[in-house]
Image 1 (cartoon, rainbow, N blue to C red):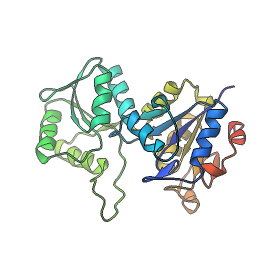
Image 2 (spheres, rainbow, N blue to C red):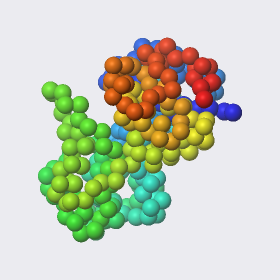
Image 3 (cartoon, rainbow, N blue to C red):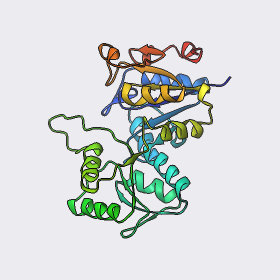
Image 4 (cartoon, rainbow, N blue to C red):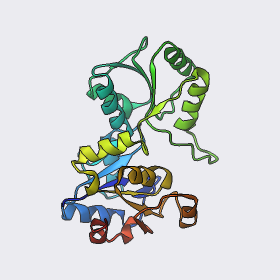
Length: 259
């Protein structure tokens, strides 16, 4: 049976702009053994090429086909729901590019969907326009519901906060496509060409990567190099199949033998 990896990025491969030690060797080992892998991110701002360039600066060489974003998952989902539809977007390049690639048209009036992704260029006027469109019948879509890190000096409001604002103003709940939604988890697996029993997900967050993997029957590996720590695990009713300090310490052959 062939197996492959869905790999979260921030907290697994890098932290901010710094590579997590050993991540380059881990990816190189997958490439050498021709083991399928996909970097999977909830960030809808960046295009796959942006991600390729980001990790290249850290010494990790991948291709655009090795990246799957919540923007790509959102565009694929909307194309399935309503082919060649229209969308009003609060978001940036990665999201707009993905929607255009799926044949969607950007609309400033009467859109089929209002789609919200990460961004720093929102104005209150744009938010008000989105509210009016949703109240007029547009469906409300979020690329993900990642919270703000709540750190001093953080310059991005956070998509969850923007979504909450619009939900309060409209009384409508957004449908979120990104992790841990089965929509993105399943579409990423299919993009990689794997069955559920062949899929191993590596993540640093119990609430997204591990939760999503458990719900869909994937093999789950939690790395302690990011958000979730070992002392937090008792707070959850589910658990990962394997816990590692970082991908540098991962025995790939042992991971492939799980389940």
